[in-house]
Image (cartoon, rainbow, N blue to C red; front, side):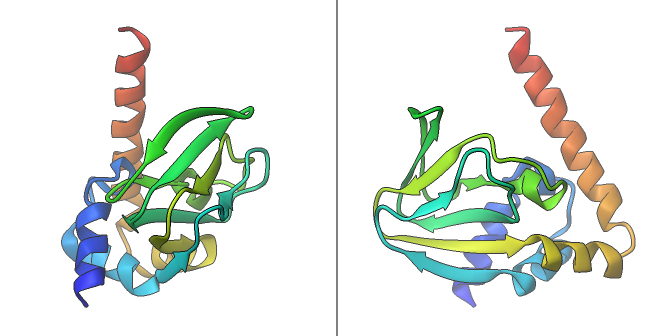
Length: 141
């Protein structure tokens, strides 16, 4: 259970889930899967359709776009949340640089939560609005 608590703590920091209550996030955690991967494992590939969202509990990963490194991700960071909302191509490749422990939530599990929990979608929209505002603010700096 401590790993689920860590996952919930990390989820609270993801803009998409920022308007969700701890109870909402516990539902998300119950549907997610704990996964370990070795260094070199490609987690998502740029241009391929995404089907899951990841939260890093341990380890690091590199993010590349068009073959160029654009970021390094570590514990507490998340990626792939837009894949939960839309079946669209990934905009980057993410590759494990070390042994990693991740919590993974698939589209199907996520859709089940939306169907079962009235009001959850509204909270997600509030989280998306925050993400858009933040992106808009960065674009004018």
